[in-house]
Image (cartoon, rainbow, N blue to C red):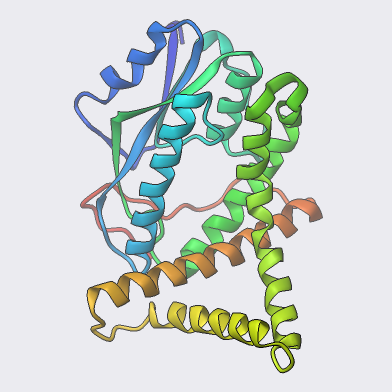
Length: 269
């Protein structure tokens, strides 16, 4: 490659006609070393479609806020670009999008968000089992890449960005362990303390709602959306828990068989 900027995308992404124009515009600022485009679900399908759609919208909102106030603590492999001179070889067993983004930040440049640079995809997870395996693999690879770039989490060198990165990529991954502790403690205290009883009942209601999200019963739209959000939440946390265990145990995902397909193209689950 001899160009000044390297652009990365996935095979199953369909780029908007003006995506590269918007993606390259921020490079007019010499302080910008990398730019992330916006993932857009162009075709909703699968049992967790509403939960995934809501998650992607909230993630894009977070990226926009981070970009206005510094650098992104996450990247999206569907569409992003970095300056060629900042590229470093990508080791096995890491998420290449996050690894490249942290390489840019580590060099002293900003990594920003270009929401108008859109990449359209089908629903990322085709089934609960697919989402579980996908989240487990991503978390393990992400933590491995973060470990290799652990210097970026030094607040004395990278300031507020280091704290944001720790919150987004480390502390957030500890939520499943906090949930397990909350379930166990509220169950033990439920018979003696009314607040613990209410908390335990709320947790059970959330799990029941997650189960309802898998039923084909014609629930009202609002109920269906809440149920699929609960299902996506619990499956995501289970996958995160397994990914953390894999990372600590030294397991590494180097190759796997992806379940992908272009928007509008049939894909086996």
